[in-house]
Structures are given as structure tokens and as C-alpha cells.
Picture: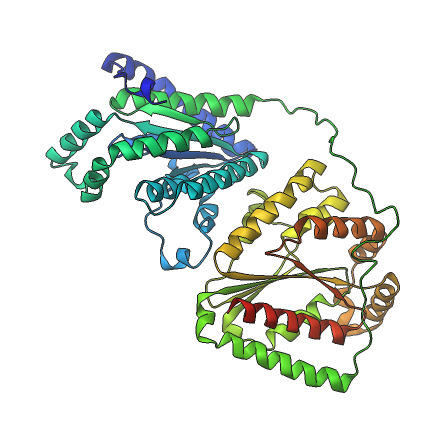
Length: 492
């Protein structure tokens, strides 16, 4: 598939000098339109053969456009901070917000190719990486991103000539390293793996554009004009009236039996027994955090449940057993302007803990399939695709030696009403009850169905839901502590 990029494409100096001024003007105009409208982000992935002009082209784009609205990222060997988190964490942090352009050298494509060429991975692992990349980029484009992937190519003879020319010039000698020459020795292997990789990851949503890198004028005009055309076309698109979603209806079970109606909501636990059990399980949890192997894992706790189900009280009993320096509590509310400018999962990726730490989410990424679904804050297709995106996200957490424990706290409708009234009467609890809580109560049945669907679609073998009957707060807290302890012990 590289044949058309080995033809010796060239652009004369006269044509280049004639076209560049107008191209620069148009690129600036379209960039400012993008920044003003903030409808979508532009993600430019730059990959290809060493010496094919990747860095020069990126420098030129920053020169031709306003660099204040461009985020440029290279990805060398991961730092200690990056190694302690899932592989994709560093790339999520580099995503540009709506209205901005992000230029990513290699991005999430480089490591799978290099690892396969150097024999660090098998063919099946490369295929798995390819599938993950396709799903990730599909998620980005579903969230509105414009993705442009440029592969800069040189033939073997061209690359050798290019590296020697760079090495000969004192001004560019620093750009040629021993690694470049080592990779040149494996050119044929790199070409074979790269061709397969590009073919598989070039999709309708995010296709690869192969550019011959021999002539700097040709590659510069090619990239500049393609970028301009793609951005202008997207910005000029008129909003299309959305057709109704055609997904099958999700209805309650015809016998009214489901995971929530079948759940034992809890029998009263005596206060004396509770106090004794609380001390036991908090002590065991604390000891686990001091286990020699604990420094090699992280723990992520997700607390979801109905309003007044006792999430806050349960979280406090967990944190009482922890060193305050080792955990972070993340209360999730409506997204900020910064968060709305990014893909849905972005604000959760940025909060992932380092090794030896806890992150506790008081509500979480499941808001998309719960409150956003019920309240109509997103379309049906958005929350339907969120199930698979969430499962992918959690699989990545677990592959990074994280312990993920997800709790749904369930109370009866009668118990919730009782707790609401108690909160209204108690001065120091009034902040816990709002008009929104009462509105949510009026949609009890809709939330009930959404929770059942959520459990059915996201309780996986590697990341199961723990359903907690929480009519009795004491019993619920002990069950939560026991579950956390058991899961960490199993992981250790």
C-alpha cells in the first residue's frame, strides 16, 4: 500500500512559494473559526518512517497557524508516573478540548508496531491492540472529534539517503541517533508490520493518509491542504436533524423479577455486633495497605446507589481505616465547562490513582447510563454505546493491576422516604436533601430499570457489581468493608 508514496513526488519552488501564502491565510481563518465555535476537537496523529519529515512538518504547522491553539505532544519512554497507570492514561491527558488542535507524535500507534517488530509481542497481541485502537478512535469520533492520521513514508533507499544527508549537515546531525540506524537495519520488518497495522486501523471514521516524505515542499503542501479541507468541510456542515434512535426497546422483565427486586435489603445488625465487626474489618483493611506487595497495585472504589442509600456513610467507614495520604475521594457532580469540552470518560481517566493509592468515586462514569439516560441529558445511542466503552475502560484498569470494586447500594422506596424526612428535620443533615432528590424520587421506576440494565451489561467476570441491601446501614457498611478486604487479599 506504499507504492504511491515511493514515486518521487515533487513540488517546484515556484508553485510552493505561490501556494503557501494563501494556504497559511486559510489555515489561520479555519483555526480561528474552530476556536470560536468550539464544536469539535481536531486530533492530528503523525507517524511514519524515521527521517521522513515528521518533526519538520509539525514545526511548520505551528508556524503557519496560531500555536496558542495547538497542543503538540511527543511520547518518549513512559515516566514513573505514567508507568503506574494504564497504558492509555498518557494519551487521554493529551487529548485537545473542543475548539483546539492536538498534534500527537505516534500517539497510541507506535508501541504496538515497535513491540511487534522487535519481537516483544506475538501476532495475536498486535491484533488485540489493533482492535482496541479501532474501538478507541470510534469512541473519539462518536464524541465529535475530527481525527487525521498522517503516515510519512520513505522507501528503504530514500530513508538511507535522508539519514546520511541529515547526519552530514552539522545543523541537523543531532537529529540522527543510533536508534535510527538500528531501526533502519530492520526496515523490511518495520515496513511489513506497519503496512499490516495501517491497513487494519484505517477506518472510515479515522483513515490513514500516507504521504511521501522525500520532498519537503510536497509533503508540507499535502498535509496543509488536507488539514484545511477536512476542517473547513466539518465546520461548514449544517446541523442535521437527528433521526429517532432505532435501538430495540429495553423493557422490564415480564414477571417483574430482576436483580433489585430479588435483593435482600438487609436485616438489622445490633449496634454491639456492628462495632465489633467494624473494628475487625477496618483493621484488616489497614493491614493490607501496609502489605509489601500493596505498593504494586492501586485500588479504585465506585459507590453508586439511590439518594439517601448511605454512600457517604459507607465511604467514611472505609477512609477511617486508611492513611489520609494514600487516598483521594472524588465526588462526581455535573461536568464543568472544561470537562464538557472533552470526551465523556476524560474526567475519570485524569483521576486514576498511582500505585499504592486509593481513589474513591462517590458516583462515577455510570452517570451516563443512569442520570443522563433517565433525565435525557444524552441520546439513546450515546448511553447505549457507553456500556461497551465502560467495559473497555474497566478492562484497561484491571490490566494495570488495579483492584476495581463497584458497589450499588439499594434501599426500599419506603426507607428512602423515611430518610428524606429525617434529613429535613435534622439541622446538620439538611444539606443532604435537595429538590433534585425529590425529583429523582418521582422517577423511581425509570431509575430502577436503568440500574437493572446497567448491572446486566457491565457486571463482568473481571469487574462484577456488588449489590448491597442498604435498608440497614450497619449491615451495609460491614458488607462493603468485607468485600473490599476480600478483593484486595485475592489480588495480593
